[in-house]
Length: 163
Image (cartoon, rainbow, N blue to C red; front, top):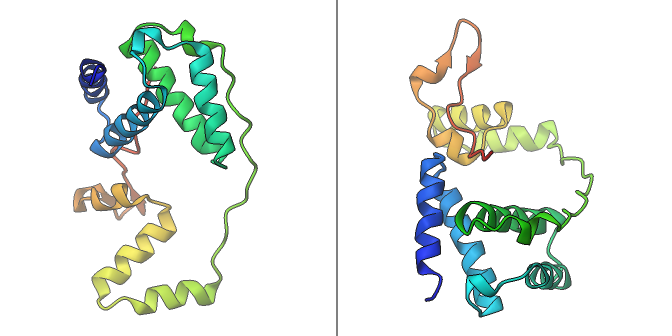
């Protein structure tokens, strides 16, 4: 495709930032979907084109957080990869919906913990729930990340940050 070099450049920049493969895959998938939707070379994309795509996402019923995430990806793509920050900079982000998390009851938690087949899995479920770890953070945990004396876990990489 006509944007393959741009995608390769984006992957390099994301790798330089230390992003996980999951983050890189998400950025690539969202950008490819956007560019396919528009069907034009990246040099010809305007602010109105980006707005059209974001409105399209609204019409599909996508959550504000999903639209904002795509907006951030486009911002990275145009600012860092294409070096045209002015194309995206004037587009405002959507308001975030204020939503309280659903709290599991003691019975539900007990059911989850008791359903585990081994003590190891029970410990994994309890650690994940009590610390609020994401799956990726949980699988990257090492024994050396546990500070038993202070009852703390050290999380090495929570995600990927951009300046």
